[in-house]
Structure formats: structure tokens, C-alpha cells
Length: 348
Image (cartoon, rainbow, N blue to C red; front, side, top):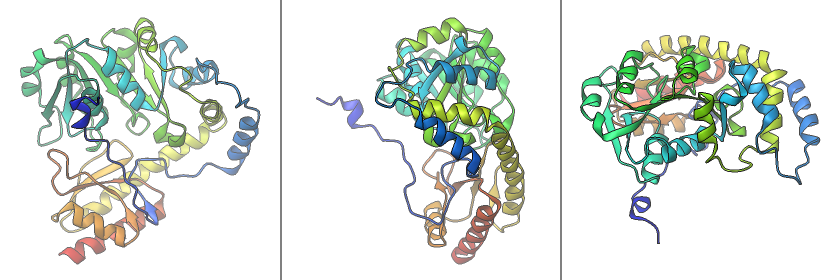
């Protein structure tokens, strides 16, 4: 029999609409260079796919250790960060509630619902920061807290001191740094030195979304305990091999691509401010949240008619009339800006 909590569950929403320009999923927009594709093909061809992959992904862990500047013993790998979020919601904080500031990445709340844990949702302030007073007022109800840093979909960095104040109430905090490469801000030092803090990273936002490789970084003893619940063989041979090539031979491509995205992010932000009635919000990620004077679903639909797919996030708390656009290549961003200008003009 399916438990009632699963029957009530609302699944994670993804964008599947067809469009000439797709800027809805916060992926790295630059294609992998041909020489890297050839190297990947050469290495993947050697994989004994009739066998199970290395259950510990030891070679990939070694590369990630160097890439992130941590020890291999500090790393737990997941089939995407989503899998790691499920592990954390299953094992950390025993039966206490799970704190989720909203709006934020929906998988934090979904994982709590799946595990049957109380979900304590606290709306962000008007400027999208943590509402510390309200959060502390509910502190006796939760033992695990998730913070996207920068936050998705708002793009801003939460006040670090507010996160630490919540942690002081004997709360285990998860700092999801999926967009770290675009912000440069991190809690990594605290994750390596404390037993109540872990950091999540991912390869999905730096050119490897199709590999589904998530990384949890923590003190050795914390990582060891979380690794006990990891599903066997959860990182496939192709994912291990391709990630190793990308993070070594493709590192220059990744770094240059991230720099391009950051430059484009600032340009797109300036252009959005120039469109009458559009209010963009500053971002430290690879996307921009913006509000228009019109219903978001109408803007979204008209953008699709012009061949551009973005994300309607207006269903989330505090995000009435808001949409989110991923930063693409310059020509994609130009197409987005033109489509938005025309959509706003049509509706106005």
C-alpha cells in the first residue's frame, strides 16, 4: 500500500517544452570542444561496461580531491546532488524536522516529505534573505537545515551570520554550493572542521549535467557515516571516466566557460534593467531572477511562441510574476532579451 504522504507528494517540476533557445535549467551553455570529445570517446571505449563500475569511484575521487582541494576521505559521491539530499534527509538529525527557507530548491522539501519528516518552511524576507527571527522561533522543531548558497531561484547569497546563528541551536546545516563556481563564496573550511556542517557541490553546472555527479564534502568521520547509506555502484563507468577527463584535460575549458558566463550574467542584468517594467534581481549564480508587471505564465507562453524557453517560478512563495533565465551564449542571451522585450510589449 502506498503511504498517504507519498500520495500527497508533489513531484519536482521540470521544463520539457520544445524551444529553439533553452534557458531553463542552469546548465553550462558552451559545447565541449572537439578534442575533448575525442579524448572522452577514446577513454569510454576502454570501459568494461559488462562489469559493475568501481563502487568507490576511487580514481574520480582522486581527481575531485585535487579539483576541490580536499582529501579523498572527505568526499561522498551521489548520482547527482539530489541523491545526496535524500541520504541527508534519511540519516541526519534522527526524527527531528527539516528546515527549508522558501523559495529555494524544491528537492529539500520533497526529500523531507518522502522520508516522513516534519517540514518547517519559513518564507524569506522581502530582500530574499533568511528571516532569522522567525527561523529561530521554530528552532525546537528541526534538527536539519538546508541552505542553497547562492540560493536557487533567487540567485543571492544568504547572510552567513544568519546561517551560523541557526546552526548554534544544535542544528545540522547543509550548505548547497551548486553554483559555487559563479559566486566564489564557500563554507568549505567549516565543513572540514565541524561535525554539524557539510557542503554539497556538483558537476552539473560546469558542463557535466548529463553525468549526474554530486559531491558531498565533510569531516572524515561524518563522510564515513553518510557513505554507509550510499547505494552501491551509484556512479556509472561513463560518468567516472568522462568526469576525470573533463576535470583534468578539460579544466581550462571549464574555467574559461565559467568566466564567460559571469561576464554575460552582468551584461544580461544591465539589459534587463533597461526593459520598461522588468525588475531583475542581482545574482551570484549562472541565472537571473526577474519580475514583470504581467502574469508569469503569460510571459512564459509568449516567450515560447518566440522560440525561447525560460523557467516560470511564480508558483513559489514571494515570487509572484517572477521568471528565471539561465545565462546562455551571447547569441542565446540576445534572443532571450529580444523575445522578452517583444513579449512585454505585446502584453502592454
